[in-house]
Length: 218
Image (cartoon, rainbow, N blue to C red; front, side, top):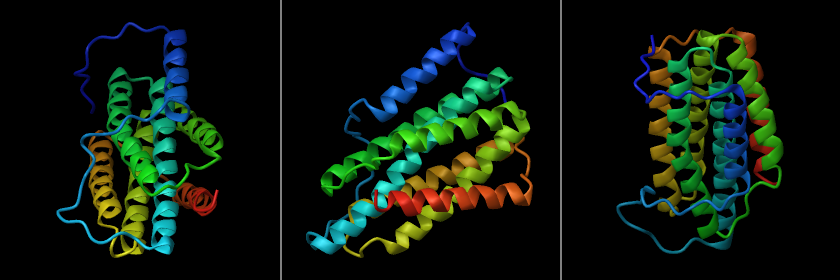
């Protein structure tokens, strides 16, 4: 079971919705500050070719979209959580995922690549899914986190393999994100997350495939 170690928060339902709106605006519209904690490689290689830079930019754009969705999911699940401890868990995870959002945005700038033009759509869809998971109950919500993070971990492993061999900077970010997502999944499972039914896991994978394929280009 989760233990709520956070400071007491006497927020009304309206306060939480306003927090969620603020989180959406910060994720989609506010400038993302440079992250001093951005993972960096032990050594750097020669500059990427134009084709390598384009591929890395597309892959990091997909990863950035994933972090936009992570913000939406955690904020929605915090909003709909019944247990204050689960709410605190989701809020903490969202803050940790904000580092990933900053890392991927910073790398996109370095690669001269654009963010997905459909980020508002991805955010809205992920927020709706997060609300549904939260309303289904705390164990379902935690189970959803477990499955989501496991899928993201596998997705990042694939990107680690697809990145150009010379792109050590992107690879360092992807590998650190992969470790963090694995930890998030373990934490949610230890907190009581249930195993989701297979059809739901398949639907989640299908939706993720549509998102990643589209974000690769747009």
